[in-house]
Each structure stands twice: as structure tokens, then as C-alpha cells.
Length: 566
Image (cartoon, rainbow, N blue to C red; front, side, top):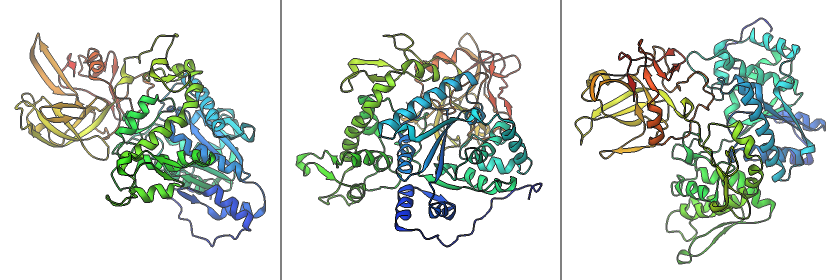
């Protein structure tokens, strides 16, 4: 009832499945095939039973560049259309702005333009007629008086804890999140009403927002909708996550043949284990859709010595062969799987490379801080005939602007520390930076900070440095410290400290920093150039030039003033 504040998530009772005619059941199967989860199944089935076409929308926030994984929802949109659904695609520019203020409005306009271009090219490429789709930007209706009043009405009924929980998997949430982040789930719920749809479609990471919508739309007089959820494609690295801070974890749409070959070769694929295998997920949800359309099998290039080429008509056959024990004659080895995917992926992406090349200038303006990507201009991908995507002028390769957007600095906690077995001046620390497991960091601090003052301490860690071996131990980042020197002699040294209340895993930000929260890897050479502008001022505030290191809890500081940071 309106006026009553919601603090808990509604638990829905399982109902008996609504029976459909064979024709309606066939539509249902097509719409729901390969989905991870369906919420409100009977709400959805009742529409089919009425005999009317289902209205579905898919929204995408216009932030980071779409990558290969975007083909998963794109292919599902083709299923919806084939089943007679009316499909709306929302370019969620206002949501992108609300998500931790990642981009300013001018940059968002360019990114929205890029999203419209690349999403439409992907749809066209797989054979989806664009005239069957409705495209809309969020700001076309989300700034209206009625929408705004509904946002206020829902805001009066839910708690900050409720919206924080709902958006936790999608929007960056800290211990003290921005109000914009808390509005995000409210807007996404209202979109279902204002786009006049029956179903919202998205990744399984959207589930909490979907449940928030089902619970709270009826409380302001609107009906609840059904929700269809796609699986999330695992990354190619051992962590299983796709992240721009792990360049090898995902495949960009404009990757060169050589880059794809390298990424697939380096991809993590444990022999005989299908679960969490990013390569198999790409094959199942993307590449087999391509093969089915052309009535082709998947071919793994096994060498003649071990039996020659392996041919598979379905994905199920591939997975069954991959999990066979070693020594079985039908076993599909990880190396042969990689070879087949590498060749097929190059073939699959090649036509898009040419289209993307035509929009090189837009890409460089929409994503000015990303490293240039090289793509083929004609014929088969060939690095010798390539031009950079981010080239400001023809024939010149752009370099990414060197600034705070190049750094990924996270708040970490030292959970274990010991002296290096082969170096008296080095500590080997295990630092929790909010990832699946602590990072190993090697620091030359033994002569300056006692080990007991390092234990369990909050620190700042640069997490997008390239790993480096130090006396036989691979260091996965750098702990930041302020150092004051008189010529070469150290006069004072202490760590840069996050403020009280800073959350482990949160990313430090700077004023006017519009980069994505997960930053691309930075070379040690470029990092050394950045160090020239990292310092503490007379009050001990950590700065990049004149911009302070900021967290959700405030500014980072050190006890050593007027010092350099490294």
C-alpha cells in the first residue's frame, strides 16, 4: 500500500504452469531457449494464451564499448522477433550518467551514438531487419514531468538499503554510494511501464533489479512484468570474469587476427571441465548460432597423428567430447578446441571490422582514453594493411592520453605478510583488493616500515600494472608510498593511507576522471611517466598534479608531506 516503506524482497509463490496450445508452446520454447532464468513465467505464458504478441524490451547503458559478449543478447533478440514479439531496444543514456558518473553528458552523447551504430550493425549482420525493432534513448521520455513524479513516488516508498541491494550487481555501490547510483533501480523499474512492455530482458546480473521492479511497480499502481534472463559469458582468464583490467579476458569486436590468435591461445581452459569455460560458452551462445544459420559443423583442427579433424554438428556433441577422459579416441583436447574457435572467430568478426573502420573517428571521440585498436581495411585481416581505430589523423596512430584515467588504484587490506626469502629488503604481501582471491605484491619497505605496522593495514594498490617477477616472486601490482628525499637519501617514507571508512575493493577516483572503473593494463614505462605527477602536498594529501586521490570516504593522505608517490 502506498505510504508503507518496503525493506524486504517479496517471495513469489510457485503457481501451476498455464497450459498452451502446441503452436503457443513452440513460441514459448523459441523465446526462452538457452535462457538462465525466467521470473513471472505464468505472467508471460498468459499473454501467449491470450493470442497476442508479447512486447519485450532490452536496455543497455551506454558506457564501455560493446564486445563479443553482446552477441548473446543480440541473438536472443532475433529469437524474440522470430516468435512474433514486438521488441524495443533502449539506449540507456541517463542510466549511464547515473552509474557512478562515469561519463559527462558530452561524452555520453558520443557513446550513445556509438552504441546505436554498433548494435544496429550487429543486428544487421545476423540478419535481423531493423524495421521490425523500435529504438529509443532514455532521455527521450525519462525527463518528462510524469516520469519524474513517478520516480519521486517510488522514492518515497523504498529505503536506500533496498535500492542499494537491488543495484549491487549492476551499479558500483560503496559503503556510501552516490544518490545517482540509488536512483538507478527506480528508473529501470519505471522503464517497464513507460515503454509499455510485458517483459524486460537482460543478463542474470540484473535479477535483483528485476525483483525490485516486480515488487514495487504495483505499489504505485502499475502491473508487474515478467523477466527473462540470459546467462553471463565467462571471461577467458582463470578468474572467469570479463574485465577491461584483464585485456585477455574478453574479445573486442574490432580485434585483429593476430590479437584473437593470441587471446584464444592464452585462454584458460582446464582439460575436461566444461563449467566456467569461456571458450565453450562463446561457442555455445554465439558461434554455433552462426554455424546453424549456414548449416555448417564446428571443426576442430586435430593433427593427423592423433586422428585428424574432428567435426561436430551440435554444441552438445562438442561438450560431450571435451569432458571425455584423456586417452579416449573421441576426446576433444583444449588445444584443438582453441584452434577451431580461433579460426571461426576470425571469420565471424571480419565483416564487422570493416564496418567499424568506417566509424574510426567516432570511436576515438567516444572512447578517447582507450589504447588504439588495429583492424584490417580490406581482404583478410592483415596487420601490414591496418589502420588504427583511434587515429585522429589518417596514417597516424593515436596514443592514449596519459593521466589519472590510466591508473587503476584500489583500496586493499594486507591479510598476510612475510619477508622475501631471497631479498632482505623486500616484503611479500597478500592483499585483498575485493577480488576472488588476494593479490601477491612485492614491496621494498622492510627498511622503512616494521612488519607489525604493515599487518592488517589498509593500503592503496595500483592494480593495472603489468605483473613483474621480483627475485622469483611475481608481483601483481604496487603498494603506493610517499617518499621524501634529499638528493638520493631518503628523509621520510610512509604508505599512502585510505581515509577511515574506505571500503576494500573500491577504486580511487580523481576530479574530471571519465574513464571506466576497470582500467586497461598499463606498461611499467608509462607508469614511470605518471609517477612524475604523483605527490603529497603540504597537508599530506595524495595528489595527481592538483587532483586529490578520492574514495567514497574522502581524500587519501600520508604522514609524509611534500613528497613524491611511488
